[in-house]
Length: 248
Length: 315
Image (cartoon, rainbow over the protein chains, first blue to last red):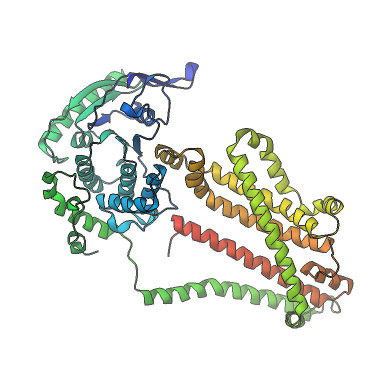
């Protein structure tokens, strides 16, 4: 995306959610966006997903053209599963939207649920699953779109630390096998360093990219390992600096 | 779930169909799967053995039945007390006589014939109302200008006492079944349309976004997300629509009396002419019971949906 701005509202009540944000993510890269709440992270994702249109500037997702939903899959903070469908049905819905046939849908859905270690839970409805399991179904559903780009908007924000840790392993494993470009929004610095190839730090009001950190830590990583903690501390300092300047 | 059940199975990563996961990741999979199995054993809701379930079911049936039985007994008791007290002694029938009268009538073909006619009208009228209400609701809920134009009209129609339509319907169609069906549709369709509109309005935005990011657009989004999400509100609308249809039908059968076509309304009006209080009361009981039975069907549908969605505890 180049020079993207997004303004909500007009006149004196206008909110500059994003101001001249330029960000390039190369294919297959895992980019984490981090910043205080209200820095426009979620707006940025909505733009990439094609759910919102930029006020100015351009968003493009490679050959797929500007994000029209097809080449971009999204995971939200809530699992956003359809309560009237089973876990398998939810995954199948994404396949159906792509025009897959019935037999293929069934087979792929079972495969994807196995990928997220929910092979035995295909017949369960969302309310019969725990929060972590629901978020894993949502991951399987996002993968079912077979998109080149996967956007995640604080997908683990509402989960406990133990479940979140397991899901980090899960994400690592799933992404390693695919040439998936991921943009992962979070406000948890450790999580960003644990997962990302690159951490992009944003400021708030207006949202701007202020810094970038490459994460050269070998995988598999642990969220509590020394190199992760060290880099996370560095990034946290940078964020603090930014926030204190904001406060002044 | 025992841990070996999960670990004994081929771990997802080594499954050949994926094949794309690098070998280096295989090492930590069993430990991961074990952790997961442990976590899930804490989370997954347990299910009891089947013989326990049978007993539970009987217990639940009894729990829902006895208050109803008690209510019937209380009503009959009060009725009997009024009868014994001698209020309007010559006209007011006692429960014993009335129920005996009902029993006698159930043995004749006439009452069953009447019930058949009335139910047939109810089914056709309500069916038409569902069809029309659903189509109107679907169009109005999604098309802005239509909604601005007809939204308040539909709500207005809903509050209109359907009996007021009868002069209009009788002049338009004459004394026949069509007039009755016309009023049933006018009585029930607005509720059904409004139920659907409310359901569409209250579709959670997050589900719409989820559908949109999957590439569902317009019609497919409507069919796969908005309609299923509207189902509970639609069922509420259907239930209300049924109540209106049933009332309109009874009013219609009392006003539009067609010769040689016995219906519950005709029987009731004959009883009135002959001042046969026992029979009139018996027919009223029949009408009440039919209304309650259908209402129960809707309640069951409503509960089934809510249980499916996890909106009620499954205890």
